[in-house]
Length: 122
Length: 253
Image (cartoon, rainbow over all chains, first blue to last red; front, top):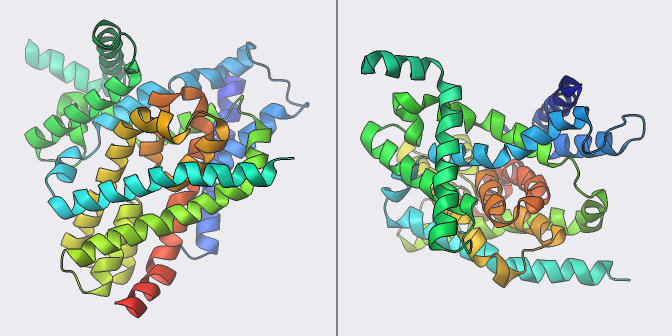
């Protein structure tokens, strides 16, 4: 049943967000710490467990894959609701800070990728 | 007649948003095939178009939610809001490889930490070079260069003035928009084509919306890996910003 897939996804989402909130409170931050990441791990574990028989193509799974496919359209809507006007009109300092932060982070990706590879290579 | 129609579309905002995004996607895919022969991904064009419309919406309405402040498009705000975005991100985890995650576990965690500290110090240095000498202002702007959530959270915790907080949000927004637009263009040059580097990319960039859109326009298969690490970034930033990083700034300035 499609609703089983949607319900499982929703359950993982809620559990993750609640745990992320608890984690935030625990370490004393007013923010959700990794709630979505935890939810993703839960869904991964659930979909890999043998007791919940889920496979791509089953009707239950389509309750999850539909939302996964809706991801790009949602991201487009998200882009359309960003405060681009404020970002562009807040002067050079904010723009320079943002641009340099992105450039430096991009530059570090190949460095860190190599680091991880070397350590995990057999 | 037109008034009645508008009212109806506003009342069914979310459904109107589905049609709206569908149209943007169709135009973008057509543009991608017709003018770039598929070289620039349709979704990359759609995201750029979304940002452009957000700019127009913001300048017309004077609000802070881009196109969603124009009454006809309030549904876009709901569809593109944090609830649907995070829900869809979680859904992308279905079918991801558990092994890739296990392998990159520690580098992923390390990349989040390095990403926060790196962006923070660059933002702080820019603030100093623009003549700010108050540690609270420097810390808040630095935190904003991490993400536009870390900035205000840090600024509020430290008692920064609202114009400094607004600046930190603008820095974070610039970062997020640039990650959305820049990722598909630069992916080839930084080896962003496998789950391992996507995990690190998510951790270094940290802006969930930027990473989400950037990977969607690059290779949708990489989305779960980047999104997974990125969601820890804001939490770590909010933790370090008003504490360790602030003390460091006080000690150094």
